[in-house]
Length: 312
Image (cartoon, rainbow, N blue to C red; front, side, top):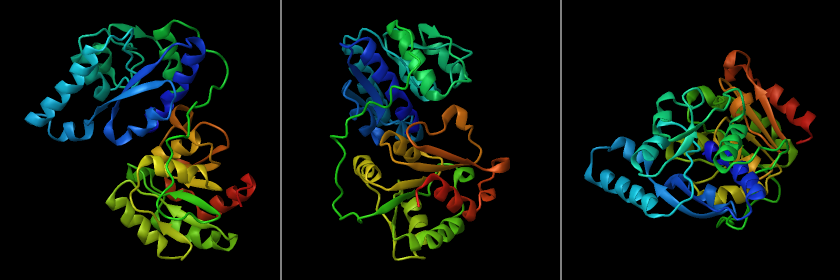
């Protein structure tokens, strides 16, 4: 999900340089909401990569892939750009009949991906993912990138008010992450909630799966002010994040969503190189664990950081 959000500023910059440009976006169905937030996106072409990976040889998977490939081939696109440059995206790039623009062998995130591209850009791997995607789009459309922050350029029109009433003042706590090494310990979250309880805030814990929800419920047992939210559509989570006083995040897609919604945030990092893929935007703050071990970020350090930032 974070990768998709990193591509949004490239579309904003493209629109400034090529005002008539519009985009169709090939996107996994789990994250279809993300491109739909950007006014330059005309439509989305939906894939199901997670299921395809598990059932690649099934007839249903083959038919779904064929449908997506045919849809791309039948549209009269001026250019096709693979913004991800990884094996998952290059799989579709390889199958379609059109020429695809991507990164060269030295630049692609996953080396074999470059074999799927007809035109290839050389882009430094030392740049943040947002800048890499901006440079790729500029290469594809033939303009130079500008030394300015274009922001994410989204519209909030599709954000959706959840069916339950939100607290009057709350923080969003994103405890889940895809890797165990990116997860702050559950006991630390419990201690943090107890430390922050006197602030008069409620604490909302969103989840993306049943297992994440179970962890959130365990954390929220320590306080009546902590609430584990059921698994919600991304448009509802965006609405909730946008209205939060602040967020405290693990290194996961929702941390990048806090940047997209301009929510003041503190994100806790372990093994990730924040210079390359850390959250980027207004009032986005990082705490980086020593030795890449999140257990080394203590609760007292987090509360002190929140005070310094003016969040509490």
